[in-house]
Image (cartoon, rainbow, N blue to C red):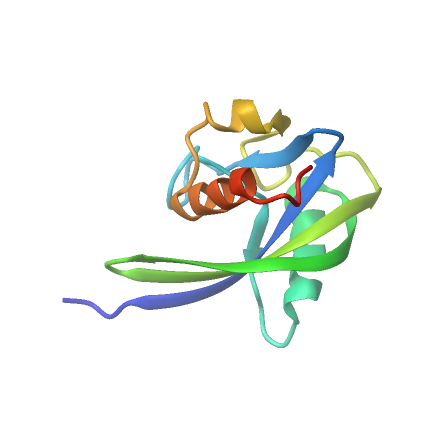
Length: 135
C-alpha cells in the first residue's frame, strides 16, 4: 500500500453576471476532461494568492485580482489528499483562452449541475449553491 500524497492548491471563483468561469481538465491529467473551478498547485515559495494569479495566467491567459478568500475545501482519495484555497477573483486584463486546459466557459449555476465536475469541485459547487455569496 503506497503513501498518500498531499497537494495544496489555489482556485479561482470568477463571476460574470450570473455565470462562473469553469475550465475543463486536459485529457492527460488525473480526472481527465472533468470540469473545475480553475486553479493549480502552490509552488514554493509562493503564497496562495500568488498561486491563483499565476495559474490564471498560465491556464487561461488572464490577469486576475484576488478579492477575498472565500473558504478552504478538502478532498481525500486513497492515494491523494487535496486542500484548496478558493479566492473570489476579478479579471482585470485579457480574455480567457484554453492554454493549459481542454476548454473553458462561462456557466450558470443551473448548467454547472449538468457538467461532470472533478470531485473537489463538486464540493465547491454544493457549497456555492447553498451559500449566498453568488447572489
